[in-house]
Amino acid sequence: MLSHQSEKMSLMLTAKNHSIPLSDGNRIPIIGLGTYGDPRTTPKGTARECVKLAIDVGYRQFDGALVYFNEHEVGQAIREKITDGTVRREDIFYCGKLWSTFHPPELVRPALERTLKTLQLDYVDLYIIELPMAFKPGDKFYPKDKNGKYIYHETDLCATWEALEACKDAGLTKSLGVSNFNRRQLELILNKPGLKHRPVSNQVECHPYFTQPKLLEFCRQNDIVIVGYSPLGTSRDASWVNLKCPPLLEDEVLVSIGKKYNKSPSQVALRFNVQRGVVVIPKSFNPQRITKNFQIFDFSLTDDEMKLMEGLNKNIRFVELLMWSDHPEYPFHDDY
Ligand code: NAP
Image (tube, protein in one colour):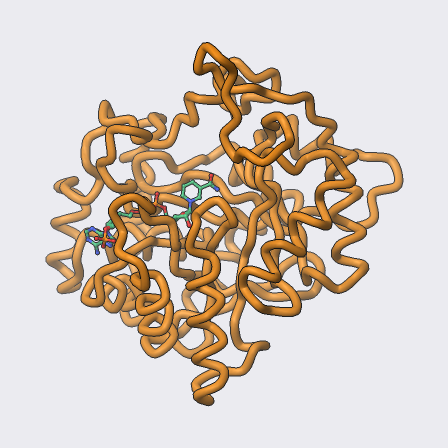
């Protein structure tokens, strides 16, 4: 039932009007610009220029994080487009993320305040726990011991969540969510005694090669929106991407459906998720691709095409988060 509702709703979305409801009464644009680019190879100023262009193109959501090392540029771009009158703050939806060195409850609000200071904004629209695993708190985002092993830390996800709830109550974020949580971890929060604010979203990998049917159904039943990261199948960066999975955008089914509508495989992949009510956050720092990735509201896929694309699921992740695989909360050992 819910699935039909979200499918119907998505068919009515337009370039100008494309947000969907969240369970707390707020809304989220169904497409946003991902802003993670390798800080070692991305020239300074790129994220700023790309976010400004994206706002001109029509994007209203931006997905960022303190650990992307360009949050200051994203904030600057948003503020510049507010100052020049293109948008108002309330037109923009910014999602920030609580990094894994900040899980202890007393570190949560300072971490969010650091993001706000970096952005130079008064609030974020969505603040999410980036990963259910923690690193040792301290100055280093990726702490390692003498032998080069990552230093994990225990995490009490319910205690972290309560600290997030206090941030929403203080007006520092409009909505709260999680990322990379499996069903068990979502249930931990949903069943927490005294839960005050429910997670409105779970940001996870989602695209035609990894369609997440079980997690999507569970989230639909619990009014949690799935935000699909790596919706184009990521970059092919061997340092963090599982290259055993073939390149998504070369898939023949995507190519042939694209030909029918005069659309690219990337537009078909994004449209597929949007039609299932899954929010997409494609990253591009290329002006043509930023523009093209947004052109997904002037065509729709038939039921048969949706089924065909669902059949492409390979159940293989591009993003395996292997540096975390020994952590007790590593989410991907479970079925979903
Ligand atoms: P993605 O958006 O699926 O793919 C990005 C890659 O595709 C980039 O190399 C980009 O290069 C290229 N690209 C973009 N548009 C294209 C097009 N039309 N045709 C061909 N190639 C295209 O992957 P992602 O960056 O992994 O994920 C998107 C966002 O999700 C991230 O930026 C980040 O905000 C978020 N994310 C979150 C998590 C998490 O743990 N929560 C994990 C991963 C990602 P160009 O820039 O050169 O266009």
